[in-house]
Length: 165
Image (cartoon, rainbow, N blue to C red; front, side, top):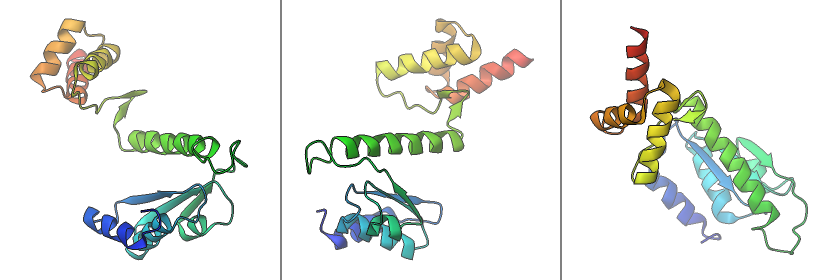
């Protein structure tokens, strides 16, 4: 798959990219044909692109709108890019996605409020978020979350607005 340039284009076409999208390509070597093809195709559509590689002066870094080099040096085990390179890539992607969540308004103070609670653990997280941001009791938080179909943002805004009155 990583050598299949056409598959990258097909996959991007299925996404129906728009100018509001960003395509991020990640390849430790910076030379993976699939990733470069995806970035090139997105560029041709006018989509903003970012290429992340662990080597300098690579086709991926040069092709992208923004090229990021995570210079981790040689791997401890030659060819095992899941160690230093993979860890650095994961950290970079975590920072990018966290920044995107903040910029898109999915965070209040330092808490992710647009959580979709699909299990009991996430429901407990929503309750904790509501309690922390509004000083509601656990019972109040749960009751309001149930009323708002577990929409944490809605509950926080409603309780904060009620507290201002």
